[in-house]
Length: 92
Image 1 (cartoon, helix red, strand yellow):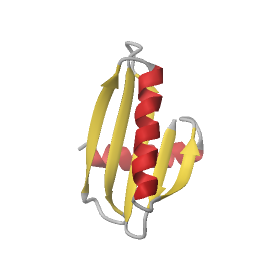
Image 2 (image 1 turned 90 degrees about the vertical axis):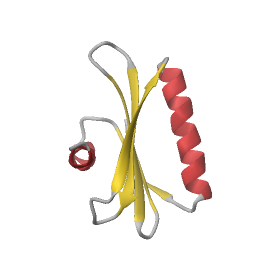
Image 3 (image 1 turned 180 degrees about the horizontal axis):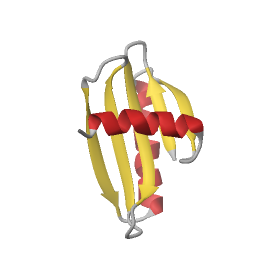
Image 4 (image 1 turned 45 degrees about the vertical axis):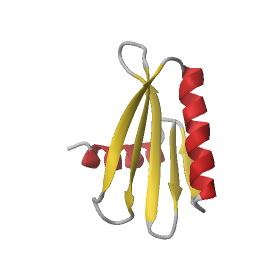
């Protein structure tokens, strides 16, 4: 699952997935739109339930900061591939 929030100048992107060991990973990227300024954090969840609880918390925080949700999709859509390219640029 990939979710993206944006404000006028900034974005937050969250990717929730299982790794090859079956662990649930929540990756969060943030930064300024149109630049490579930002950060990337990976968190290991105990379960899918915990990962989704973290996503709910992130959603609440972003909405309170007046970000709007602009994307919510599953991993294998064209939109998700574009979002993952952005994450891979930050991971270098």
